[in-house]
Image (cartoon, rainbow, N blue to C red; front, side, top):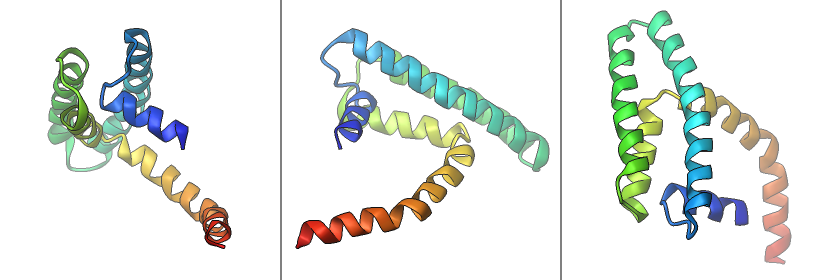
Length: 118
């Protein structure tokens, strides 16, 4: 659970040390930038959304720059982060991974939750 707390702290831009926040920003922009760019190119070339996908790249870049450079925190920062993630088409890459993890991990999570109740 500490990983999720650190992830949320980074997304909401509430790290106490600027070095931690800078590292988190670089990691998120690299992960979302690479996955988003690849998926946007795939969506733009293989679907009729070509120009729309190019527009989302521009909107994503604007939102990501605003998320990283503006002095915003808490839920507003999270909103900009998730808006940029949604527009970047990175979810096209991450959604199948999340579904696979859920399918194979659900029995483990369920049995642990069931054992904690007892």
